[in-house]
Image (cartoon, rainbow, N blue to C red):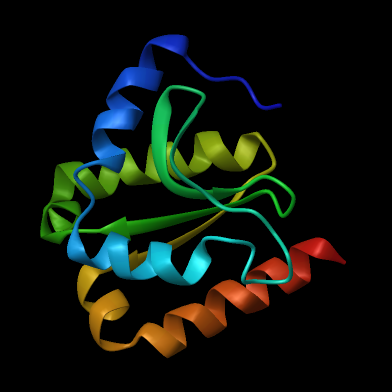
Length: 120
């Protein structure tokens, strides 16, 4: 099990109840081991972060970003976050809300490919 801050459990639970439309759409496609039989968790604490989706078996994180992630400060914070997660052996896939909502099949194909590659 990867380390995480215990105080992030409550905020993660709150985030599960307040998922965006894009996160909800993606969750319907990730839950119940629909990709290669791999279990995904939603709003999962990892290290000092709460990631949107996490597949432990594939060591894969999937992030769904709103418009605020394209601001310079957020881009820098996301870069630091990705480096920290990569140092834990995780691969991070990042999609924006628009991609998830309008290009769902392409997003799913990218996630499927990443899971397949990581499970070899």
